Image (spheres, rainbow, N blue to C red):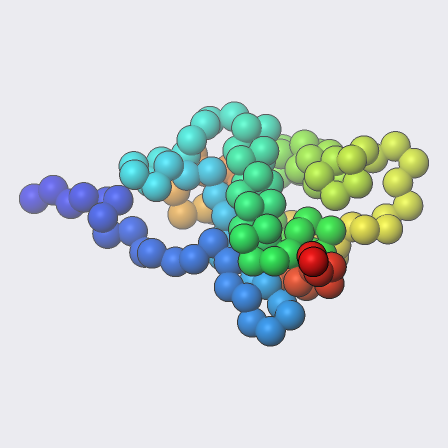
Length: 134
C-alpha cells in the first residue's frame, strides 16, 4: 500500500490575525508538493523561512519590524552561529554597531524536526502595522 504523503499533509494558514496581533504557523523550507526540504544547505533554508516570514506578515498587515517574539527550532547546534548572523541581518541589516533596538525577543531550541533534512523552522508573534494608507 502506498500513501500520497503530500495529500495527507495538514492544511493550515501561514498566519492568523487576531485583533492587532499576528501569529504565524511554523515556517519551514519545505516543498509542499513533496513534503521534502527545498535545500540541504542551512543558509538556503534560513533565507527561505525568513522570506516566508516576510510574506506571511505582509499578507496579515504586519512586517518584520512589528515582530515582538520569534521562536526558532534548529536541527543542529552547529547552525547556531549562522542563525545568529541571519537573525541580526534580517532584523537590523547588520550586526556591526547594533544596539538591540528593533530586535524581537527570541528563543532558539535545538530539537529533532518533523521532516528528515529539515534544518530550521520558525514562528513569530507580531503586532499589526499602525501605518495607514490614504
